[in-house]
Image (cartoon, rainbow, N blue to C red; front, side):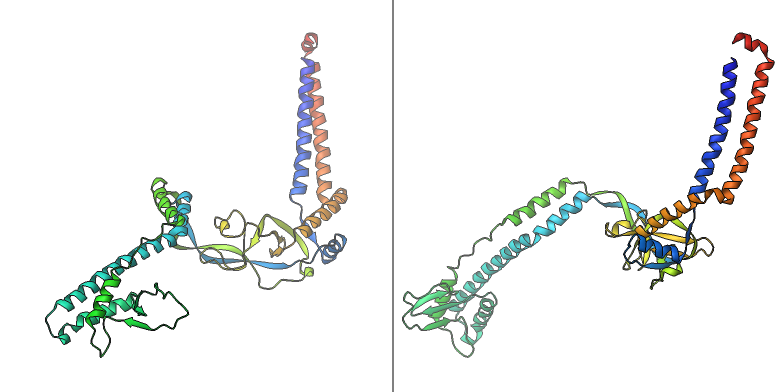
Length: 374
């Protein structure tokens, strides 16, 4: 039992002393300021052969921005399938447009054929029924339907050639209607007969066309929406860090500074209702994903006296500066006011702890029955 009391007293003393020591050391280093002088900065740059870097004053600016609301948004899988759909859409549109053109051409051929029949079978005067031929020729011109005769051989839409290319050839274009000229019945019947031989084939169903159809089917099976974030219509205000247009010289950085805890990315161009040009943001910003992930991140330091902020675009400079200042502060720790105050308090605490130990021992001796139990 005696040993138990002694052990308890010593443990209490040790806990008090070590806790006080830890609190002092933590306070000393966490509150460490960067005492920067132009001479120290120049020394670090020369000692570590640092590349030149820029320093920008930082101000706080109020800007307009749009926050995010919770709403139903398209899922990533659905958006990806929509992209696939757009990728194959040209092939799908080409097929359908060609199909439509073919159908129109077939209808034109039927119309021209009927008009020629009506013209040939009509007993009306030529001047009255001539309009049928005029309309038919316009349709043929619009849809590129041509019939011509080469050495008495019919040529349809430039597909039939003479058998002997060395012979001189004479070409006769056959028209349904020519201005100021009456159309012959033979020409009309030839034109009518030849255009009915035109073969209109179905357009090719390419791989991209088939992929489009598959993508359409896939969209039906995919979850379309989920709960997510959408940009609000409401314009709000927020305060942000913004660098000045022009950098400052190194000798401007002089005095006691504190480094802010975050690292900041410089926004090079304005993104409406998200960022302004020269704004500084961190990865905590909800719009961070709009920037490239490989953007450099640098520190902001704050002057303890003037509260001026500076964006230091060299992590190596700040890192070496912190090391140099820490080493200097450690060497001078014994002469600092903080250390002397701590030492005085520590010795007083140590003396108080010893008194507590002595008091504990006195209590142990007073209760002699405890000694017998021991």
